[in-house]
Image 1 (cartoon, rainbow over the protein chains, first blue to last red):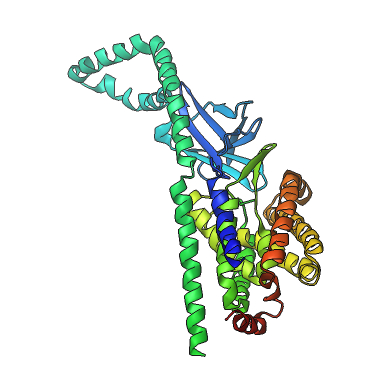
Image 2 (cartoon, chains in turn cyan, blue):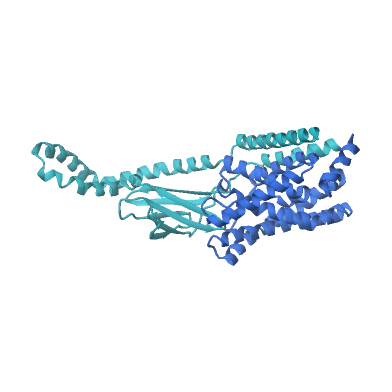
Length: 204
Length: 215
């Protein structure tokens, strides 16, 4: 009788552990440059997306600089105006908060080069002919691909999107190893407690 | 049910952590040695139960089983649930290390309340009546937990009533499931190993006669 009970007690957690796929109770969010704007998505780690979720766009010091909203599929877009750190903050209620930090270096390429252009522009007129010559082909090359660049960026971002999703899903997967590891820790910790309690009683 | 890092204000975290530290202290002190393995098993049960998810509306909820932990363990539910929450935070990133005190208090305080409210009904009655009390305890502990979470959120800036409503309604299915689960577990324990409930009636004194009885 006692054995049956012990077996049942052991089986109970194992049964839960076995009921995979185990899904984390976590907010999953990410943002990345796409074309000339920032694209991101917010959802829960069980695969549901945060629909029509208002998002506050903040600067590094926490001041609000704009807002956006997720679509039906949990994605949102935001057009940056300055080269700076953007923080996307969404509060889904019930203690679920997403904070996505986007570094200035990760901003859209077009945007980053726009910001870089004024810095290099004043240098070119004053500079001797040699560097100007070197710069000219590069400049014309970028101008030529200007029309194609958007297409290229679009294509690359479309290619990467599924990968990105897969990596997020992979990160959120609770592997059986960590579940068993956690159970092992629990067994060990309570074994230690049991040991200490037994020793204390023995010394009494 | 896990509140994440950054969702709570500092005073809430301090108060929650203080409650948890006090609860763990009491739990460790009051625990008879015979109950420690049971605490471990319930800790493991909670650890795994939190991985069983259902998505409801914008949020997703999971089993908690803190009612059963409270009914069996009393104050010792604090250390048992704390250990499981700590490991969940480390392994799965549920909740977070800074808010672990609040998360522990949110689920362990209802467990202790249920222990005081429903335990007498379980100890002194037939297994059937005990199962009903167990069901009540299972559902009540979830309801109280949603209240605690809403309270913690409301002190951190969210409006209490909408927050409480959101969390409470999302957990109604969980309440039903846990009522059935806890009732079944209590019924089983009463039939198979009634000492598990009897031994803690007066924790420190009851432990010894039990040990003698067994040997």
